[in-house]
Length: 156
Image (tube, rainbow, N blue to C red; front, top):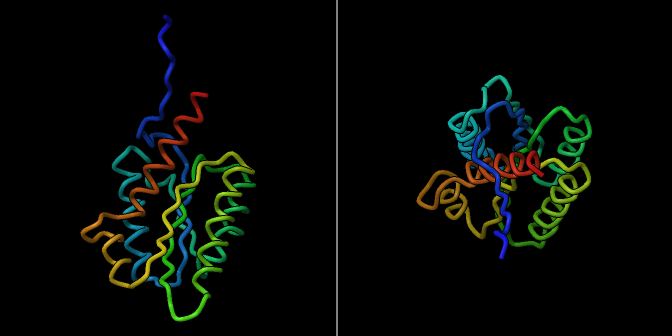
């Protein structure tokens, strides 16, 4: 039996141009996600001069900003970060759901890897734990996913 070919991306950001698009709402959390993403990109070989951080007002606005960036064709990957904390109204469901759907649509439409680092938590403490606290940093995780996917797409 012939060997099955397997392909996987590498965690090598060397030469990649990456946009980190951040939602300013819940900025104290999102700043930590941005720091995690940018630090991870640099530690994996990205030149700091090839990283651009763009701030949108909130998670709901992320897809339209991502769309503009992806349509220009000037980046190899995008990292989307934000924080939506459930409140007492259904607002959370609309914002979180539309942000996720819009982010996924941008990746599919433009073929640009988008790492999803938008936290959707029940409490602020849960967000802290996922933004550099005891549960790691989702911004860093999203950056790794974007880098690995960009490398994988290059090989396909």
